Image 1 (cartoon, rainbow, N blue to C red):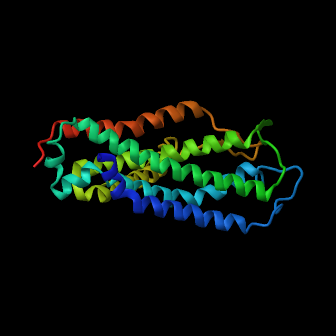
Image 2 (cartoon, rainbow, N blue to C red):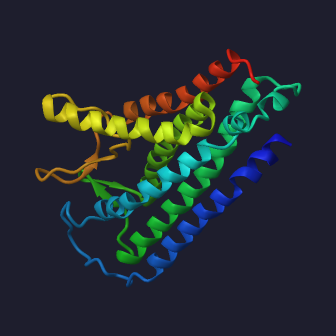
Image 3 (spheres, helix red, strand yellow):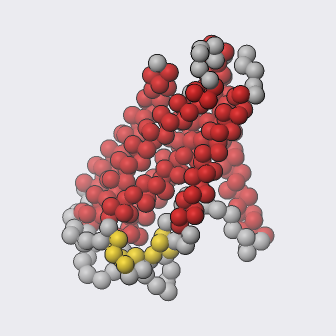
Length: 252
């Protein structure tokens, strides 16, 4: 029953996400087949680079959807004054947190997978029959690229979703604004640190999957597995923090 409640709150946002994927598919189907010339490609016109260029505009809408999904659930209920009723049920507070988080991530994952499937279709239309993508001289299948980029997308939305969910538990109806403020403040801090201390680079919100340098062919970024592990830990830290906060809070 509780999952049904979360679905009622989030279904319009989920439908909007699928609509955006549908619009992306409509645009891809208008791309002329074979528009990328066959033959040798440099780093500037390789399918891997084109994949990333097409994926870049999706960061903002996916991030916004993650913020919206994070505003649903128990934080929203506390803001409406119905938290005390929910917590009177024979369920632990961890139950509500992880049901919210799991169901929200599942919906966002479906949107990410659908969007990346459309990007793969775009590559096949631009360069039909191009076969595996060469990264640092090694052939890598489009399926591997799809899985990696879907992982990158999931890490981004997991971070933003978890941050907003925690902020919603912390600040109730002002959770989205607080989360946006934290993200903006981090981006400003990142720019300031880079300006004042050029040798220090704070991590990007998005995962750097590939290394694109003029000196050689595109390849996978260094320490990619470590980056994925650390970002997964940070994304999971927010629902754990929300659970701890709820366990220590008295609900009015």
